[in-house]
Length: 212
Ligand code: PRT
Ligand code: MG
Image (cartoon, rainbow, N blue to C red; front, side, top):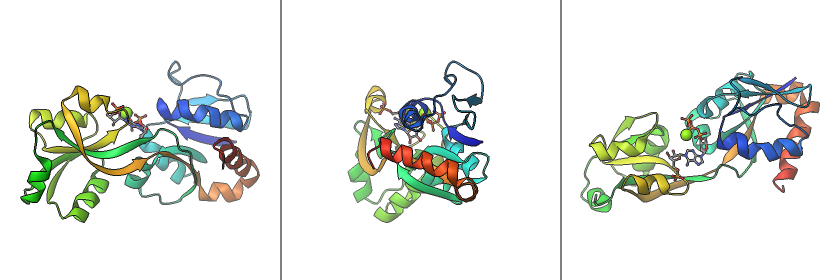
């Protein structure tokens, strides 16, 4: 049995064509089912539905053989025990610094001000501001980062941006690009050795589907 860990939403949707290329069709959609284990047309393949940030953990411990996770999540996780053979180039976005419209970010940085930054991505934010020599107090949040500058919790946020619609709707502007993000196929290293005959063809099918 091969177990693949996916999160609901954009990662599940964008992984569907890649699974199809490997001959795997889920028996139901996670949005309409409450099941956390979803069977497929193949007796030897099942999907488990977990939080996006938990995918690397399930694969690291071998509870799933394979998974799909954003680079944002993989960097925060650290990647221990994970083989990362493919950038799937799905669920693309950018990790950005954003502030409320009218806040003089460049001015504050030039004056050497200490900035309060709210984010879910504390490791990446710490590294980014340290490299620039900007002093920050990081405030860890688990979601809705866009709210923080509007209610005085933070001067800036570090968050993912895709269309820019969420920033715009909340009177925020992006002021710095930290990195481009896409999702990767991750594989448990021990599982790859033990179940190579099943796992390697799946990696090859995914690679073929993205034109590698
Ligand atoms: O939603 P939940 O709290 O359960 O978990 P999650 O946000 O970690 O999962 P999910 O499924 O939303 O995201 C999974 C992965 O998709 C992330 O780890 C990213 O690698 C990738 N991804 C791509 C995104 C986005 N685009 C994205 N736009 N993840 C989140 N967003 C959010 C962003 O945080 C912001 O709140 O969407 C909002 C901005 O979108 P725009 O289009 O308005 O700019
Ligand atoms: Mg989300």
